[in-house]
Image (cartoon, rainbow, N blue to C red; front, side, top):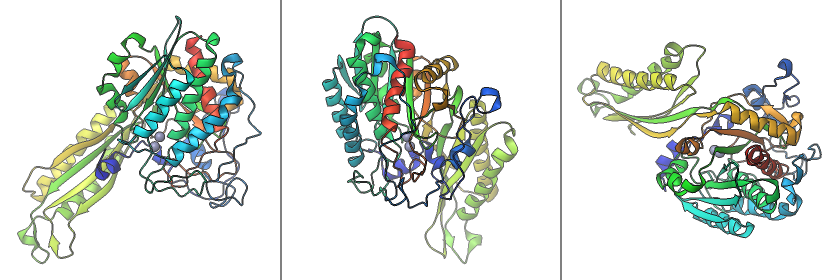
Length: 478
Ligand SMILES: [Zn+2]
Ligand SMILES: [Zn+2]
């Protein structure tokens, strides 16, 4: 289990960029279908994402206006059924256990390193729905469904919750103080199990192998790597996937809709811990010391010039100093300062430039201050770039359009969020795509992932997540 410090530092799955959603009234949601703008190519922009995160209700109102904050309605009359042929036969019948499974996970959230209960429940359900083989790998679970010859698909769902105290008021709210499924991973698991169940019961609709992978520790960026380190590739050597797929519940588009993107979709993320050293002294005798508070302050200001002065305007980069710790007394000059930094990038070259600039500035400011010791710069969390394969994304987008209709399929603008999913396809050396699944209905209390009030609509979110997993998989399995 990660220490609180590790957890805090690594808690950067990145959907947190919508955590600061303004709870102000907004006009109608600005979702666009692919044909509504830009000559047929709709773009779900960050602005639309943020705009969609407001609500015409007050921030304390639910879908009905008088329900508790975070109340999740379970019906969406605006969503038309997906057209997936016989592959989703039985979807109405599984809805009961799927929703109960979701609520159970939501009541009992497991954070990184503690996913044993969730993994056991997933394993039991995979046995029940007829997986041909179930593997326990690095804290995760893989259910293998074999069905003749063709192409193999791996669909990944993350299982972990967050160190957040829930404030939704839901009747299935977390029973554990300080732990909450505030990023929708409970919905990912329930949707993935539903998809596996339907594929298992409709084997005449597809062929070859479906791998249902349930991953721990996405929020810390360590779970996918833990599975890889525990031999994921070797253990699946006989069932190596041709393509990997994953989805995430988002605040936009609205529930019942999906959003795809070709190329860089989620940023690479780096968290750094920087320790710089001064020389302790009495607060009245600065001439006898080296003040690390002044040194840290100079570093914080100078770091701001990396993106503004060293990165081309057309390139993307974010650098935030999220924490500065120096001393604990007004009249004592401390002997060290600790800074926690977070970086987001889409381009590996930009990432290299920024990492190099951080080191140069830290060392330069230490020298300028007369620091008595070399600084220590440590990487405490790293998330890889998520860059969706164009061909896979095209195939999946086409499958979604056929399944859902073009008005329910959107393009997602790249956002500075981060994920560790890509470590799995990268380990196999196969292409992948990662898409968004809308989780909120108009009029709901829409807050960003990681917010204590994060309460997606159970339906149509689970149903659409299930259908999306099947539609995307059938683009390769049939
Ligand atoms: Zn998250
Ligand atoms: Zn997440």
